[in-house]
Length: 113
Length: 113
Image 1: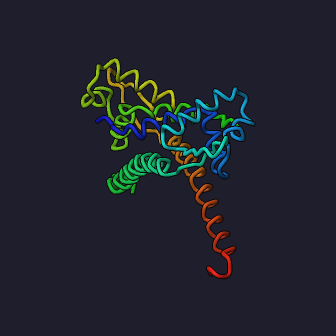
Image 2: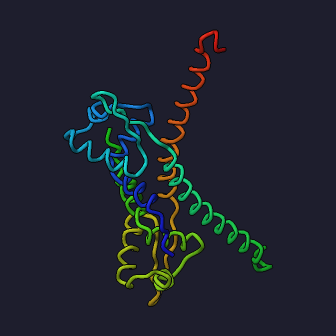
Image 3: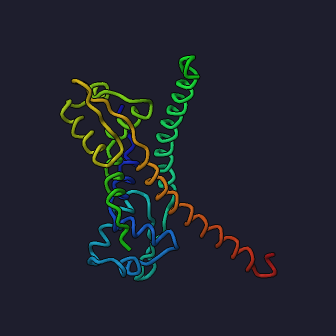
């Protein structure tokens, strides 16, 4: 019953931190340099680089260095996997609840019908 | 730029573990007792109880004790929040990419049109 998927382990871990979610929020509006990402965050540049490394390790962000500037871009493919995992669980459970509701409606005692 | 939401911190942290995802997968098929949840897992009952406590703390699972049996039920409301957070980021970024594609198509040099 273990849901083995190292990719999902890393994605959900990456998403569990507010600073990392903030960086993804920024990158959903377009690519940014590391210093642009760091600018609004109340932390050191080295802390930002560590968070970025977690995001990159999880496959959520790609970075490319041109000259002295490293540009970060959102990669949505693993986000899609994570969204699908959640959606599958949620819709399966909601389907069960609907089926239960229909069953109870059908099996009402005659005097309540 | 911090994406402050303790609820999302806890949900994504809870989802980052394969045993906890396995327990949610099981509960998406219907309520289960703690020992039913533990049965297929290669770990001690006390480890299962600890994982369950993380899931309960994140609001993903509700438990109710009747007599000696504790029954666990999936709660999808915070799953919906997590799914929405991911979906918003993904669709915003994909919208940006589409807009960029349209812009580039419109601004093609005449000899390439």
